[in-house]
Image 1 (cartoon, rainbow, N blue to C red):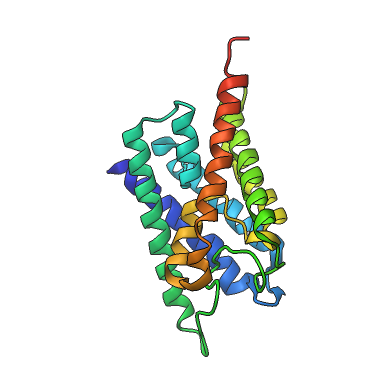
Image 2 (image 1 turned 180 degrees about the vertical axis):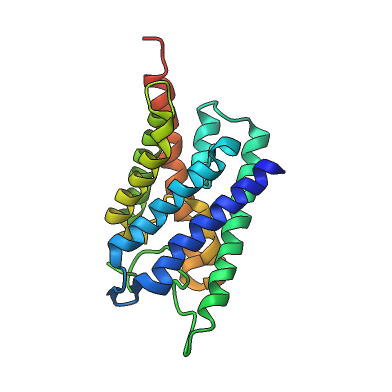
Length: 232
């Protein structure tokens, strides 16, 4: 329960800070405003840095089902813990989206609309209007690179005390590239919470934000385990 609760709080913080920055002060339907793309990117990245140092000693601070599944494939976590982590992550993301909805609903003239509460998506009407292929490739490749950084910085070759900062800054870089394409997920839980409340296209497109990040994470685990952790 301690690990489940830690992952719940960590994921709650990531979604509330990241999606909150995007929805409340960062981006509108017509493009970046307020803190803009750079500000939103740093909001997600700094949330990871903060949580890495807060709960890293308890769970490793996955706060992302793609990371948990990747670690399971790499043999770095037990199946029972992985299940608890993912349950906590999905609950935390949903609670954060609920809090964000309560905050946003207090704004005069608020309506949910398509892809509300910082939901991820693609296609006509969503930010850059990129197609399904672009969205899938973006999410899969960037999740692969994200997991590679995580495996490397937390390995015997990495600097453990700086791992949280390196991982958070990598997420900033990922958002700088992916926001116009998908709004940036690389995290099924981050997509799940807002989509549950937004419904509509956010919910029907949710499958991609599970499939692509998990595929990228599993590939990263196989590459790391098969190439970098061999005796040779």
